Image (cartoon, rainbow over all chains, first blue to last red):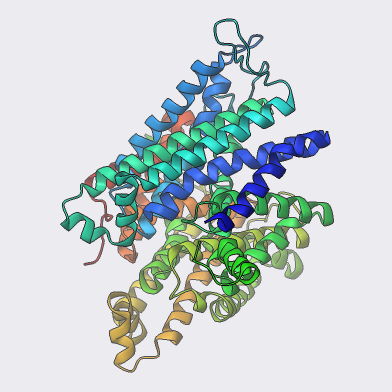
Length: 320
Length: 286
């Protein structure tokens, strides 16, 4: 048990102390990675734990981001707590409504239908004037975090944003761990393993799936809100299917259905992107080739590889 | 009234073109159980081949013949090297691998041809317009496109319903293992169907190139609309793909005329409505 905690706790200490280095570029990059990790964790609740491969998760991410952008007045700050609550709420509502439709399908259909619905959101933001069309919209003034006169942090400072996002990431991680250990979470894992049997046991399977879809949408909205708050800018690319593919890639690369997998995947994919794009302008080619090779020769993703490495390092031990 | 007639022709032409791409996609889904995100890339590949080969040879017709041969070869090679390893894997890994393929195709395209938008001239033979009514004319090439698409649709009907290969394909779609046990070389049938799907998508791209021009990302737009076609028509049903394509052609074309801002959304609303009514699509086979 202790041994299993060495790696994650070491990584956490490293991440917590990192801003001391003062490298602003990397602080902001790591903040973005952590936001993507929250996004990936939310998707893994569907892909890894419930067995629902959603290819349209960027829709709720984008809805969260756009909610902040639309709530922010041109020259004043939006209230952080109220706009955050609203962003999560709107994303959850969108996921609930879409969920009613998409959960009528399964398998390949589900993948295609989630993608198609996400594309619908994309067109709403891209073609209409609601969110500034294809140009997107600026969040000119960062949301204001004050509660009754007291301001706990300032989102204009990159280091503050860094720690806020780190805390949110830990909270989301803890929330999902608790959720998965609850009877509700157990039922979701039962559905992934054998949906027919769960149905036969009398579980209202569709309601469970819809609840998972809504929770995942709400958490994706949270991640989108954070990204808009960090970058101060939203555009339809946030909702594009590349975004959905990207986050799915993080989940699968890191290892779907593992506690740390999505976080590892978010770090790995973003660093891979950084590495390739400093080496060559055609980084997508190398990324694509890496993906194809990983699927062909390394099924199970990085988490699987890490498990094997860890077993090699510490010798034997339980599958973690 | 004239405008309605012209939009109707546009709708049918767009729908038939979609059908060429979507029919290959639905066959690959239905028979091999593979979700192929890279199918739109084959459409793009076709359009770019039309551009490159026609500027090299000076003739779109020659380019098309060469292009179809090339895309069949590409299809066979891809099935042999990559897709044949995917049949036993789950959908997640299929999504991942074909997503990687999209990145590769897009980047190769940008390396070889660049990121500019290119036009492909309409063949001189079909360059004119014909008068539909006194005041309206319609480009001949668009009519030829619809005609060619219809001919291919008819050809596919004959191939699938009336030939031995078609019989095997239909049998393979309903029970893969059983067909294999009966002594049919299922792997070979899969390879042929895959190459056929690639060629259909590429041919659609070549046919569309003079009308839509050739631009980066063109494959992905088509891919997602084709997913909608397959969802509405029902997986594996070529007939369903035809009906759904025409339906989408109508909704999209008239959506653009009536509610321009929301035309992009209209197609997806249609899909949502069909999902409520028939979650398995209009023509899902047993």
